[in-house]
Amino acid sequence: MFDIVTAKARLNITDATQDVAVQAMLDAALSLAERYCNRGFAYKAERVRFYDSHFGSFPLPRYPIQAVTKLTGAGNNYHVHKTTGMITLHRDASWWSSGHEVVVEYIGGYKIFPPDLVLALWEIFDNLWSRYAASPTAASAATTGGAIKSITSDGARVEFDVSGGAVSAAPNALNYDSGLPYSAQSILDLYRREVA
Image: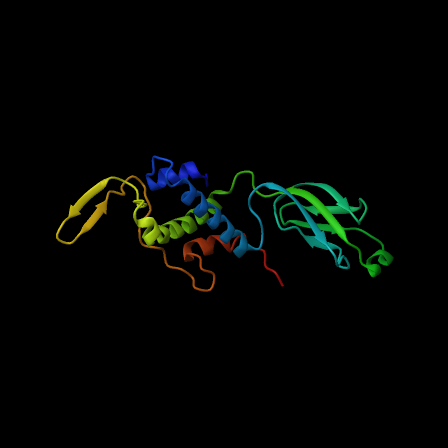
């Protein structure tokens, strides 16, 4: 699962004081993954417009596709490629030469994320959270989670017990082109829609 309950358990956070920050990092991790992959992952209904319909095949941004609920501007002669997120219209040659606006309403995305996608999302989340936890705005919130393990007064150092599954304070190695941890990017490459 990729949700706030699991995130708080992983971070060893037991109260609601950081719920807004945790949810923001979850949303950011999903958004980064979706932007990198040029597609949506979360299951939901969407409406998409295509203005240049000369090609006859359109990539829907959220897949796998559960169902096309409405198609306007192209009739009912079409084929849905559910796993690749494509819709292909079947028309005669004269229809293609004029160009049309086509509107597709559909439901797509994953109801339950595949395990490897969840792993990639957690890698991104962990990286974002560790950077947030190290920021001055988060310092007073004890974002590393866990009980105090030790205090060193002469060095003014406080160490937290993170053995309950909390993430490391050190971010994973990042690919500077994508901004994603290498480990997450290697998984997301399997889900990426290449755009010409």
